[in-house]
Length: 327
Image (cartoon, rainbow, N blue to C red; front, top):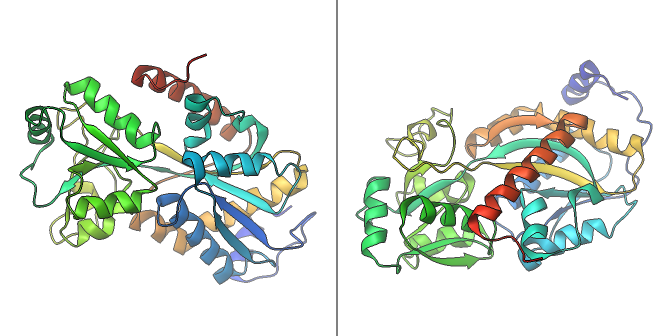
């Protein structure tokens, strides 16, 4: 197995040690959501990094399996027991989809590889809307008497969870409009078909830069660290936390790679070290900043412990939102 120094040499082009196991045919990255969303963007960026740095001898193929709010991709990976040529890139849907639907699936059915980042959520409105602050938006929603439309990805997933938590904290009521992905939710906000959404930064950065969307706040315990200007006047660092704006709602989402169950330790180690090499590249660091992702890498027992804690936290959130499937 490659040590850290050997990993760095491999990225730089020096010969790498032989692997105990490596892929013998193309590797499929399953994205359980539609094209254009944050998970899809991450998979395709990693595909590009692997190809550019020749980190694998086999090609990588990205496959979108977006049915049933992510359930199709989860179940496809579960059904691929023992297949070492398949990766799943996913988010907290890993727990939320089974919890709200009685899907016969657990993340423990799969093999954890690596968490590569955590994603933020931002409260976005159309730039032509009158809301300049969260307080103004909440007041407008209350005045709208339940007619204000909040768009998001799928039902009973992260976007609707956040929307429900906003309602519980403020007393405002929204019509939640589910879409196939964050890209579609961003387009609908630009067209004023909805009044707001809680997209990830990467899903709305183009519209923000173009002056179509306004970032009211980020649902995080602290502001994002990126200070490079994205718009003419604002960087991600300039976006206040929602708590700063008087809305005490926080939510961050892991970005994690899993594999089917039943793979060997050598196969698992191969992909863990592949992910280590990917996150060491300058292109990955640029990707994190461009999409305002929080850099965080976990593997092994640390990742398994995180998944267990995060699953329990999401169970509590879903119970508060009233989304847990009835027993």
